[in-house]
Structures are given as structure tokens and as C-alpha cells.
Image (cartoon, rainbow, N blue to C red):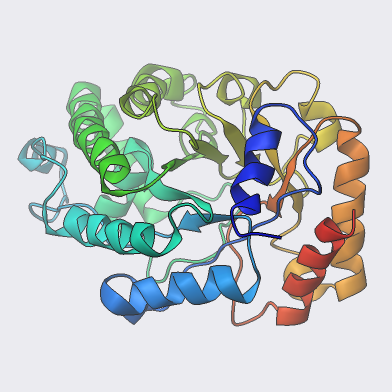
Length: 329
């Protein structure tokens, strides 16, 4: 089997054709010293080659330009449009160029972008260490601060979201120019719409900017949408103009069986990154792969996790079991 079969396998699913067997991949955040430069390149190459993955999600923990500490709603005025090649962005672009030189023609790669709202949350209060998501809708300090900002001056927050989205739009286009086959756009509506004081805010403030970012890479061949958390309006995300949609079908829902009824993009999922991968046996992980394929029926899908996993907890044998179950399907 030639390495180009990885691309053919994924392409078949995107076109609604049955591949020789289901494509499989998974991803996790690398160590701090592996976020950029040669160490990041090697970490990604080792990851994709160790498990012979069919596609690669390029991690991106390089951040977004932060002009100052955003402690008041007035501080949001300091956010200005970026060109998309500032140092934080440039580190990711350099990573993509290097990976493209190694992997182009072998596997498709989608590079991670966090949408405008997720980016604003991180600018307000960064997460100490990136890792698997918390699916419980508990208001964090960043959420509390943003709720106060919204109550004080919603237009200032709306402007900040638009400015960040404008910058991410330029960055997304540069990522494809640098060698990415598309973007892996991470979105999450329960952070905003679970607050009883801000119902419908995602549609008003964020969704138009999600679509703006995707429009910038509309000609790319492998755009993925990751619906993080517990989606409140999965149907709206399922209408996004992407090639693939990925979400925590096991931990958050909807199930694959339900999603295929109304979802046009190809589906990526089937394995629980929060339960079976870290805590289950290899046999249980393999069983989830087989169950996902049974739910999909005649609909070809990509096998993947619901989100990132903790590499310090997940045993390699569980990851190998996930691959082998897909390859033997």
C-alpha cells in the first residue's frame, strides 16, 4: 500500500464513496517545547508515522497577539486587526511549511484554528495547560469577565469579536498558502448560550464570524469543523460549509446514528476521548470503532476521537487498537 492511499482513503469519504477501509486519526496537545520550531515538526511527524495515521490535525498552541491585559471592557479597544503573519501566527506558518515539505502527497493535514470567541476567552484568561475539554458548563473566570463585559457594553465585545475574526480570516488564508490542506476550526456555543442572560448570543455575535473565517479557505480541499463542548444547536453547525464535522458523539451527542440523518459534511468520530481512550481496555476501544461503523451503516465516515486526549494517561495500546479496528473493518 502506497502512502498516497491515505489521501485516496480520505478523499473517498469526502466524496461519499466507500474507501478500502475507514480512515483513522487522533490528536493531542504536545509539550510546551513542541509548540513550534523543529521540535514541533518532529513531534507531529513522529505522531503520524508511529500510528500510520490517515490524516493529520496540526496542533496550534502558539496563541494570538495580545496587546495588553484585558481587564476591563475598555481594554478591548486595544485589539486591532492583524495581518496574519505576526510572531504568534508566523510560528504556526513555519510549522506548516515544514510539515508540508515532509507530508505533502502523503497525508492531508488540517491546521487548528480556534474561533473568535474561543480566542477572546483565551486572551481574557488563558488556560494554564491545554488538554481535553471540560464538557460541564461551569462558568470559568473568563466567562464571568466576558459576561460582565457584555452587560456593560455589548457593542465593544461585538467589535472585539469582529476584529479577532478579521485577523483569523487572514491567518487562515495564510495557513493554506503555507501548505495546509485546510483548517480545523474549533467552535463551541454552550460557553455563550448556556448563560440565561445571553440567549441567542452565539447567532448574533459569533456565528457570522465563523462563516467569515471558513469563507477565506473555501477553495481548500480539507476543512474540518470541530464542535466542542455540548452543542446547543448542532443542526446549525451541521450546515457549515466544511468537508468534515467532528464532535464528541459519545460524551455529548448527538450520536452518529442521529447525526447522519441531517448532516451533509463527512462525519469524523466514534471514540470517546474522555472515557474509553484513557480508562478503557483496547478491546473496549475497538468495540467503539465497530459500533461507530455500525451506526453509520452505508454512510462512509472517518474514525476519530471526540476531541483531544491526555497522552500522559492514554495507553499506546488503546491507540493502536483504534487503528487496527478501523483497518480490519
